[in-house]
Length: 164
Image (cartoon, rainbow, N blue to C red; front, side, top):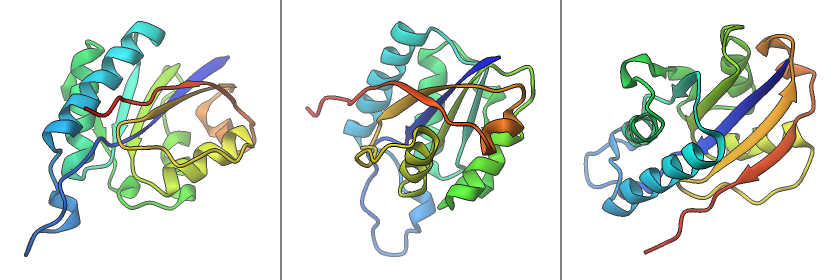
């Protein structure tokens, strides 16, 4: 079965300030705009998703909620996976491999460098790092999501939100 994976880097976040943790960083106004633009692009190009899995970091969660709004996906169904905050590539793969068999299209909102490293591994190409708010859409022939460990995928496209 052809399955689609949308690997999305969270949109632009505020710099950390005194006594604030990296985990608590919010989106900037530009980041909010980027997330809306990315969601609009996904809706126009790929119509829908069956699942959204997000890092629980504030900036990633905000990005995921904006994408869900733009894709008419119930934000209550977003899965927040602690293992994909500041992850290793292997942690992202493990999380993806646990997606239900009923899911054909899934968005993963996470962080660099692991997100781009995973993309490079799956499509076997040396691609530039994903920019804030950028999403890469890949397709793979997978019987189940567990097959993600042994399958090479095809890059279908990426967006790059315009800077204002």
